[in-house]
Image (spheres, rainbow, N blue to C red):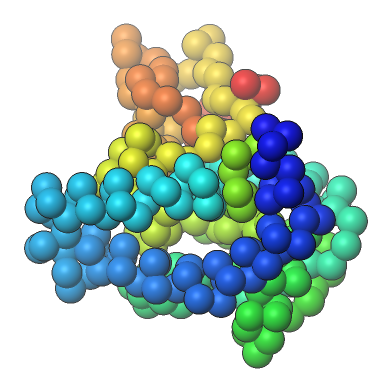
Length: 252
């Protein structure tokens, strides 16, 4: 992908400028329209095949493949990532929840990192404030305890490394998650996380808590034991939910 270096490099001026333009002018309208079509007052029309085609291939697919998408990441790995960051961190209101106001989860959970700090603090100076590593980790921990999961979003995902924000996501209000669930992986792709869940059949007692916790409906019971029945995106919610400690995340 070296031909895209001028756009995908972390220090590329073009990339930094497109990230600012996305933050300032594109992100909120796209989130608003998408939520209205999937869960809001336009949902009756949004359920039609025509709307799915237009939203999927006309809007979601170009953004997901070329512009911006997320990678589910277990909270311990996110905490480790924060420890290893070099540079400022800032926090502001979740872009999804602040747009649609359809979710009661905590609002100040949008943790911007690296070039995301520059873009979002410049685009919304009254909404974002710089914080230290300990406050960032406290936000992650609180959200994890509330049952949310983390997605690290990538700008220009052609090389999957331009991570600029850590989002604390929920199945009721996260618009990228809803786009993926409503339109499918082909129309709005999420990046598969670097970890995948593995269940120890000797320790699993079939409680089913991991099934309820999995936001991607990837787990089910078979012969009294939990198993994967769909793609594991690697969020790690099943690990926290299992009362037997039978699930762990391992490198993919």
